Image (tube, rainbow, N blue to C red):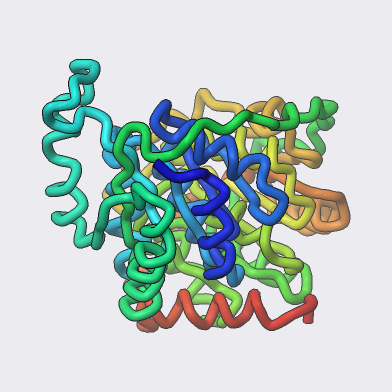
Length: 382
């Protein structure tokens, strides 16, 4: 058994000071200590996949990161670990508990995952080791993990058994209450503009020096078609993760971060909105481009017609919320939003762009990630 501070301090010496996660009773001592640590930042996520995406965003902003979760939560994390961290080669230290460890005796819902935890990590090509059980192992285990992440630029997992860390008290400030923002703007009632035309306006109105994160599917491809740039991050996988990536980046960058989301992606990870509202980064703008369908997979309808994204964002604590449904008022909505303190949310009704032979980004994901990281880490807004 180790003391939590022994792990946190050694991880900090190796630059790991940003944590995201979802609680587990086995994690309680370490998570409590991280939350109270003066030289570490913890973001509580609504799902393990969201935590992985938040950490990825923080890495893009120059941070070394760790994600803490229960092994059953690996099911929620499979998608970003395989379609975000793997293709973009984004490292993060995974601290995964071992509920259902064979021979331990645990609740029935943990039995199967306990048997397959190691095999699942192996299948995802996430290198692993056991979490340090004694103080003398902390330095060598972290050296192994950090050496692998530096060398391979991929995640590494510690599998943490029950009782690995001594008890720690929880000292956590409550989430502050925030007044609900008024919703500015309105839908026009006339034909919605094409998404690519809206993207063009966003491109033109985005704050100087901003980083743009575009969700998977046609949104990122259309942004690419408007002109490839180091400030663009095309989320080619990890559907629903763009806003969480944006949150991680915004919390660790002085630059403005603009997330270009879709209705299907936003619906997949609605919990992200609650986390963004709670963390309240003033430099984040979240724009949902809503055409009511999964366009890139054949136009299957989403349920967005019955969802008021602006009201959800308002109730989640976004500081500025607006609607837009025509090009005639979009510039004004964007300028007003970018002038306000964030987090900002804009729900834009759009129509399919219907572009023949829409190009896919020709720049490899690993290059997209590194040039975006260099861009965000280049210093003050430029």
